[in-house]
Length: 137
Image 1 (cartoon, helix red, strand yellow):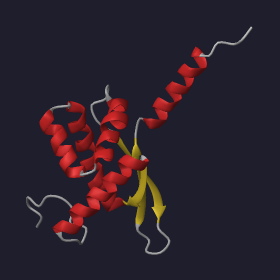
Image 2: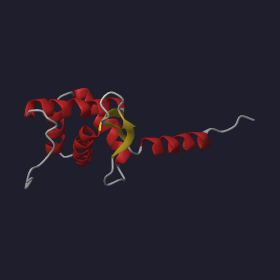
Image 3: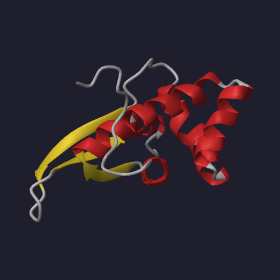
């Protein structure tokens, strides 16, 4: 029975699992989109949502916890300056998980994790730029 058992082990010990999660979240922050398995994606989805929520609050303790987990100043800066402003009006759902189908080698399900508001915001910015450009007489 799984009473009060929390989290996903992913057939790894705790140090390997933490390193895996940290590297996947760093890749998500740096590239904006990653491809992984469903189990890893579900585990990372929760952590990425918590990272964005903590960074949105802006308190010193939240930012220090984010920076201690990520341990790279460039990733923390990118999270705070580029990712968090996209979600200033939303309360959740920062990460989208799309299923891709089965992997050919071992038939494990693949997913793509990406920031959810990116495409919509890009469309809005594109429309605003088109409106602001005045035709030359």
